[in-house]
Structures are given as C-alpha cells and as structure tokens.
Image (cartoon, rainbow, N blue to C red; front, side, top):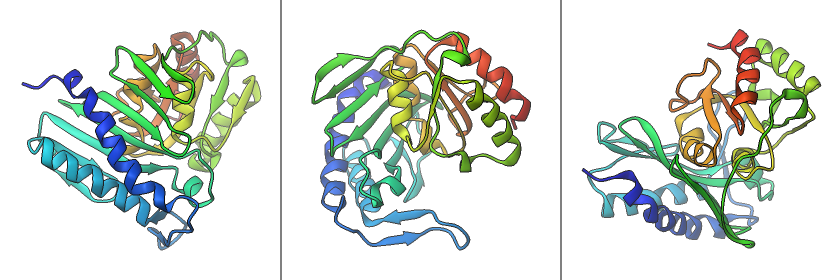
Length: 263
C-alpha cells in the first residue's frame, strides 16, 4: 500500500507540468468558452491544457490511481488514491489578467483529503500541505506555514470569492458576519485559503463548491494548524458550503452562525 506522504514530491512534478501548459495563455487573450446556457462560467484552452498535462503524468507514473478533474471528468474513482484537479481555480481572474488564480492539485486517500498544493506560476508561489504540516516555496524562500490565533469574529479577517456565491438565506447570514468582522476581502478564490494557512487571514466562507475547488486546500489549511469543514461541521471533501478557519475558536463561532442556513 502506497503512503500518501510518499507522493508529496510528485506534487512538484504535477505543478511543473501544469504550469508549463498554462502559462503561454496567461495575459495572451486565450479563446473563452462559456459552460452555461444561462449565466457565465468561463473555460479556456489553458484550463484544458493544464488538466491534460497533469492527467498524462498521473496515468504514466501512477496508472493505478484515480483522477477527478474539472475539465475532463473522472476515472477509476474506486482507487485508494484519487487525484482531484482544478487546473485554473479562478478562471475569471485568469481571463482578466489578475494573478489571483491558482492550479489546485489534491489527493484523496480512501476518501479523505491527504495531500494538496496550490500553485501560482506567474508569481512563482507554491503552498502545500499533508494535513500534518504545510509549507510555502516562492520568491521569499521556503518556510513552514502556520495559521494565526483569532478567537472572535470581531477580530477576524475573512475572505470570500464573491457574495454572489450565496443563496438569499446564505447571503443574509454572511452579511451579518461581514458587519461584525474586522475586515472582509473579496475576489480571492484559492488564495484566501492559502492566506489563512500563512497566518495572514483568519477564515474563508464559501458556498456551491465542487470537490476540485477544495480538496487540495484542506491539507494545506489543516497542515498549518487550521480547520476546514462544511457548514454543519462535517467533511469538506465533497464541496458544498465550506468554512476554513485558522483558529478552532473562530471556527466554532462562525459555524454557530452558518449552521442556521446549512444544507
């Protein structure tokens, strides 16, 4: 049986493959497709190229593993180890030239998020974790990640990608939290979770996520000392309503509010 920790070096290989495939398209006006008939959910050739590169490498090196990806679906989901891939988390940021997107590379072992990396190749940053430890590598070197103490909503810096993620009931509760919080920042996509792990923010509140939006980020936040759950306190592995916090006290305080609209 292969230990997930033994696969940690493979994260960097997948990161290199995805980055090489994606970067030629960034700020190069790639063709944009819309996945929705009503609304706007963009996908570009960069998304597809990044996922193809990672899938090719996984199938070549670990053919017994499964894959769940945003662009090309699933294969062998019954495997002990399943790679959960989002080649560009934050495609809206990508197509508008903002470097707040990232490649998410996650590993689910027996259904549990066990390994993950967020890669931002334009600014050359990587955030990774295995649930027990988490680390950063980038322009300021390599260092251990650690979430910070924050015991109350009033003291918290909270991230979300956009309040448009929320249903009317969810939005009402989020707005009440925002009114109480020290600071709320929008437009963060996967970077919000990375900043919680880095101790530069305190929580992320989001809804409507898919597994490939969150699996890679769970081992990073938890490896840095934080907590990730759904709004009832259960497993975040299947996405949905997600709360990530750097401090258990804050997590409990936010869950008490979010639980009123949890599904």
